[in-house]
Amino acid sequence: MKRAILFFVFIFAFTSSVQALDWAYPFVVWNGNVYEVKEEKVVERQIGEVIGEVKTRPNDMTGDYYGDASNAYPKGTKYFAINEVATETAIAVEIGENQWQKAVYVHEAPFHWMNVCTKILPVVILISLVTIIVLRLKKRKNG
Image (cartoon, rainbow, N blue to C red; front, side, top):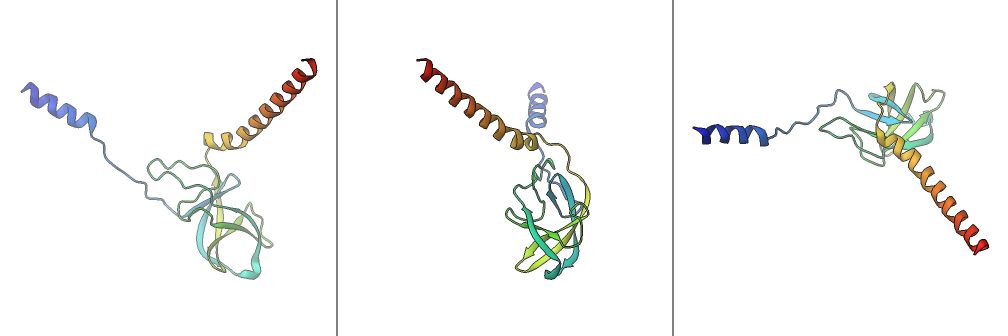
């Protein structure tokens, strides 16, 4: 009896279920903002300059994402400004050669520590390198 109870406790304690998120809509993240990609096509004459691209994918298990991410488009997918439309309102997402779909602003992206890390880490490294170089130059002059 003790073995059976121990067996069931072991089974429930060390088994995990696998779940994946089902996203409500296709989205892209650019400049800290989430845009829902609509079915609306954008014609070539409306396409402005390249403003970014998908760089990361969200975690399908937790839903976490950071940086310029997308749940529907692969890394490298380009974002474009739409002529005469503010990027705070909508952007265009390249879905194929000379094909774009409109992505409409939904909300700000949630905070993720990697957003801070990717912006601050290069500055910290640069400051550290400059400090090391300055200290070595001072040491050579004094030594």
